[in-house]
Image 1 (tube, rainbow, N blue to C red):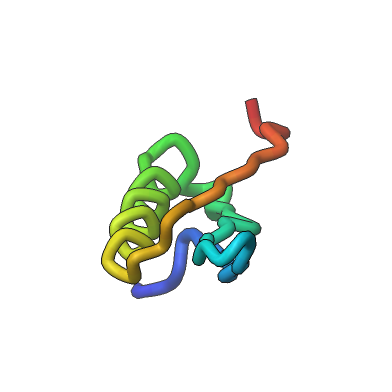
Image 2: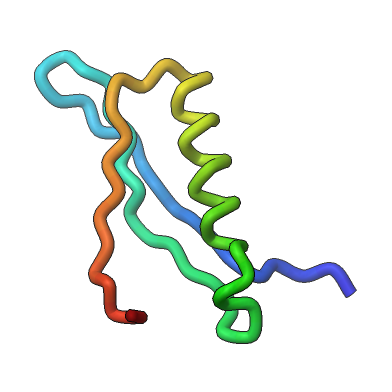
Length: 66
């Protein structure tokens, strides 16, 4: 069965004439945590932002899953 096990959502923010990308929400299906899925999504987003020539990528977390 093919189904999503995680997500990452972000948006563009232009500040001081700089094109920034902000990672807003990310999550993983509880059954797939601690398997590296979110790490892979983050790596993909970082590479994508570089290709799109964003000057900054901001990722903020609440760290509520320690």
